[in-house]
Length: 220
Image (tube, rainbow, N blue to C red; front, side):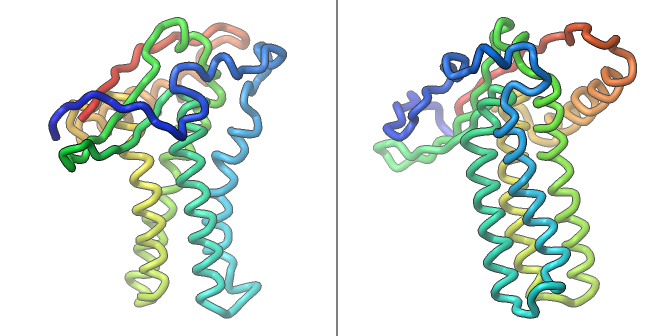
């Protein structure tokens, strides 16, 4: 899609790039600088999975289970897209339609070294693990529903996959640049992010500052 000037958002209460002004200085040395955001980043998507797995224990109504799972999936999608991505890893993706009716996808990243040095690595690790693992669970549920011929549940699982995959796609594009092919970006992500985090956990001495990364930005 063609590039365009990014318009100002009327409902953007905290302009992208100014979240540091909202940071609580008393949490600077703590393990988690955004504990509530980190909690809800995992809570909504985890609750949707738990309800899907155990809803039969509490209700035999498919409609009731469907509604509750979709509600938590929707809350998760909104929270991850609009809050946790910005505060935990400094990434944001969104879409707008210009005056000519052309749709533009915007993938943004705070790529300054000063910001990356302040990113809480525990929160960053939780953000990416939650973003990746939950679609894997829903992928397994899709196979179980498909081979079990549970077609009504298959519809619910497909909604979950669509919402989870949208955020995963958007943030991978933010993390590796809007102009990069998704397959290449996903491969780079697996090689650099997950492997690097695993090695970092095992080898980095306690209290040692982690290395910083510079992230690209893009408008499509």
